[in-house]
Image (cartoon, rainbow, N blue to C red; front, side, top):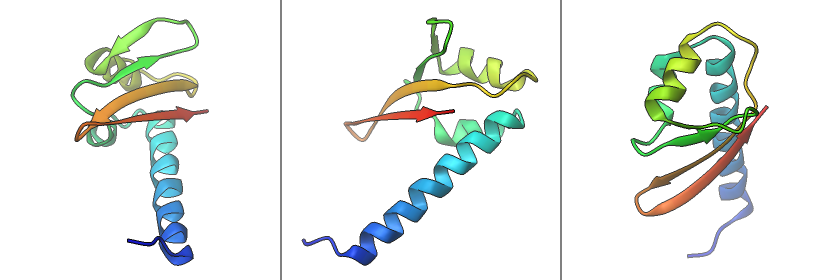
Length: 86
């Protein structure tokens, strides 16, 4: 199946909205929204270079703080996904 420019534009809009939601959730300690984003086997490496599992990350998100800068990796349906947020 060929991908059209319109499909890419729609995908780009979806990815940008997800990224905006991810950052907004971090800045507002929105754990419920983060739970929707994160796979069960989610891990994160933060600037302190400590690996955190899903629950440890959610506990951190629940605490008021400055926005995090994170590199994350998770698997969904057998596919890997890496993301970076500032």
